[in-house]
Length: 401
Image (cartoon, rainbow, N blue to C red; front, side, top):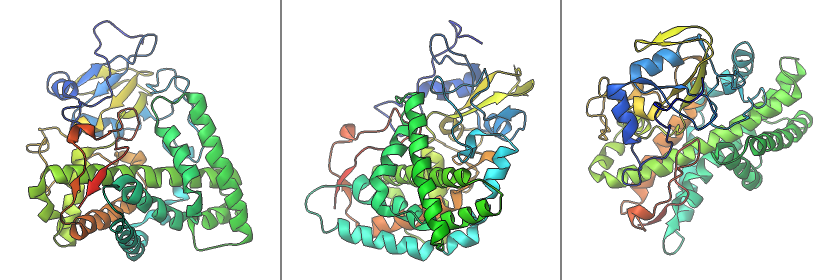
């Protein structure tokens, strides 16, 4: 459906005065018109915006909605957007989605991720030790929040960390709201070509890593070599970009709420609850999750017809006062925090969430334990937030201690 004059514009940027909060307009819509048409700009479709927690779960959990961006009514955030390679399976429906996801399910089982925790702790310790040797103010993104998840995912996949500059540059393009669809497609291709070479290398010289095991599945005919490469590229991209931003944003959030920091320094159970609250509070899926209705569905009392697009505003739904008490406040003891939608919901929810949780549960307490006098080295208004990226975060975070 074309835009209508009455449809509010879907503004992506968060307020400069409250950069950790969703735009105030959408919080207002959640209370007054929780399912409403919004405009993506002149000449583009006007999808439905869903802002309540209950309605968000309904859409995300329903097989009546597709993630395929090639549907005519799909509410893509880039014009001309393609689904990308099959290995980036979050943009595909079943059976492709199920086939691709199944190849990786064992890699992210909680028991297997728990075995990675000593290695994550070692890398955290090494990075913090190196950081404390640097003089003056230090960019926490460059020296801690970005390299930690990059090192972890490289070790897990069997990717040389020496190539981190290349894959981080391609990842920036994939989440950049200003990048064209053509630029995104080139980034997909570049990552796929790089990983394809690594698949072939691992076949000749196997290791105890994900790429080796994907190559073995290709040998069995379960997937193709290109699928194995693209699955590896997807993990390489998703495995560092989101967690890096969560570490930086969480640091700013905790320094703005110093009374909450002691809850992060308790035992494992307390830390786990604290991390869930940070995930709920920050909800870094910035452009919303996008779906297209495959059939007529009623959501929040509103009829959504087949072929109409839907944007699920995760950060607004995770602040729904109907489900979370005093949701705009940070409470690291919140008992129902884990019911947030920060990892999505339904069959497309984030496969790597056990790894993300493990990294945050280890990195954040250790950061504040080791650097008890940590502070931001610039005025709050000078922190450069990522307003134009699909994953919200911080470009640079100068700190001292």
